[in-house]
Length: 173
Image (cartoon, rainbow, N blue to C red; front, side, top):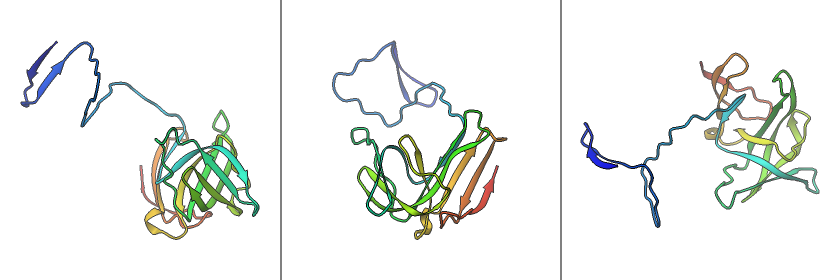
């Protein structure tokens, strides 16, 4: 173990094991391990994993999610478009697909419209719903999509202002 100054003048502490009994304040924590995901990744303004679905009296879908003891916030906004797609295990077929507008929300739920959608499937427990645009707010009408299975690509899409909107790619890699 030891303390030393590196070539850039920063102080370095090296130890085999550190136990902290009270507070540990860190500005930048680097964990040297690899992580991976398969399939498609969508970067957007909000996402949830549905833990329970209740159909309300108007035929709309109240989608609850686990806030994991307050560590997961509801980042959806009114008029957002909730998008869900699931693929078969061989990634050849879509087994679930829908886009529906968020018409109400609360701390641990979003309400998706029941009567206006792209796709016929209904929300169900276990669905991952991502924000895929907004019908009213132009600052929430874009996403980034990475798909490493279907040939590998990264797409930046804007203009997602309706559940059926295809948007415009403004960057493709």
